[in-house]
Structures are given as structure tokens and as C-alpha cells.
Amino acid sequence: MDNFGALGIFIQAAEFRSFARTGQQFGISSSAVGKTIARLEDRLGVRLFHRSTRSITLTPEGAMFLERCRRIAGEIEAAELELARTKAAPRGKLRVSLPLAGMLFMPTITAFMQSYPEIELDLDFTDRLVDVIEEGFDAVVRTGEISDSRLMTRTLGKFSHRIVGSSEYLARMGVPTTSQDLRRHFCLHHKYPSSGKLERWPFRTDGPLDLPVSSIASTLEPLIYMAERGIGLACLPLFTVREQLRSGRLISVMEDELADVGAFRILWPANRYPAPKIQVFVDYMARHLFS
Image (cartoon, rainbow, N blue to C red):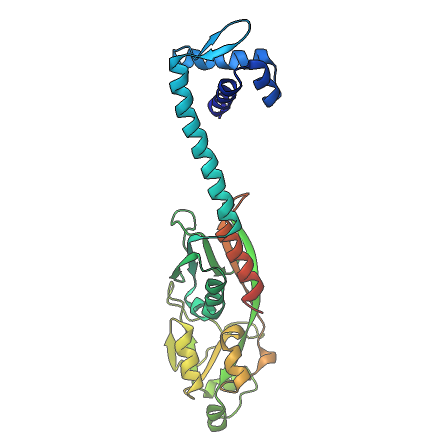
């Protein structure tokens, strides 16, 4: 960076043909300008200016060096303008990791793409714990607490669970009111792909409840599909079945028996000045995902 400063002083001195005026431009003395030029000449091993008591003029080597320095300064200015335009209009590839349930975020993500058409989304769906930095992700959405000093984090929203079934199923099998009632029902379970373990239905009662297992799926969409068609009951995050509940395709039961509230968080590499494409994605998801 000191070299860039010296080049700037050299360019101004060459254009003003005066160390004094150059010093005024940079807020330093003419003597400091002269010393900077002298150090630059020593480093380059050539004389850049002919000096006299009344004026300075470029040497042939100085004139050649000035032409190259102007090109360098022009490239720096062009880079600054390009970054300024990028900040004004976010653009470029945005690589995002989402949980497998993230397919259910697609209405929000699609709306984001329509709002920022110059951002190219590269979406990776997985439930494994990714390394944001090492794997080159711009942002990651996950549930639970994640502690990594290299990352910034923001809560996108909290969610609760619902036990849901179709009206046809409940008419056929009866409406359960306690966790013990579920022992005579067909229960549809979610399996964590990373561990193979079944996700626990979050009852307020202490200890795990041994529920019947009628079907298992490693993603939520098949469970929603089966519940809608009267195959059984599923315990799912509310945000994944909100539309089905509004339309009556699914009915919620035993709401007072469920205890937990989860949260989705978005994480991205810590940076004092995050790229505009990351900033607008974080802000958009926080505003709209659970609205």
C-alpha cells in the first residue's frame, strides 16, 4: 500500500511539475514529496525527474513510468467503480446450503429470485453439517445452535410442530387426545438422514414415547403427501403444513400436548462488509420466510 501511495504522489508531481503543489494536494510538505520520489527512484534504480531550483521535468525513464502508472491508476479507479455498481445492484453467484426440508422454502426463495434477477442462486439441499468456509458456501440455513467464531448468524424465525392427519383418517380411526391414544394409530415418522434415527415427537411428557411406526421417510414431503391421503398421522413443523391446515386438507390434533419450539438460523462468513448479494439474501429471508 505504501508503494501505491508513492505512485500517486509521483503521478501528481509529474502532472503539476511541482513538488510544492503536489504537497498541497496530499497535505504534506514539498520536502516530504521530494523524499518520497527519491525513495521511489532508489527502489527502481533510475532517475524519474530532472530537478532544478525552479522546476522539475520528467526523464525519458520517468515519462515511460508515468504512462504505466496512469494505466494502473485507471485500473484501480475502474475496480472501485465496479464495486460501487455491485453494491448498488447485487449480482453474481450465491451458493446456499439448505436442509432437505428447505424445498418447502421455495416460495420465498422464488420470490427472492424474482426480486433480484441478477443474483444466480446455486442451491444445495442436505441435512449434513457443512463447513461454510471450507466448502465455499455464501450462506447456510440450519436449525439448532451453531457455534463458530468464523460465522455470523441471524435467526430467521421460530417454529412449532403439529400432529396432523386428514379428516377422512380421523373419521375412520378417531381423534387422539393424549399421547397414549396414538398407540392405536398409524404414525408416519421422519428419519434424520445423517444418523438414521427417528425424529422424536416433542410431547410435554417426560421421556421418549414408543409410538407405532407405519412409515418412515428421510424428507418431509412424502410424510405430508401420505397424511393428506389418509395413510396416518405425522408430526411436522407448522410452517411445512400451514397451507394444508388453512385449506382443510389436514387437521391438527393434540396441540396442547406438544412442547418444543425450534428455530431456523442463517449463517454466513464473518466480514465487516459482507457482499451485497449475501446481505440482501439474509435480509430477505429474515423478513419473508415466516411472514
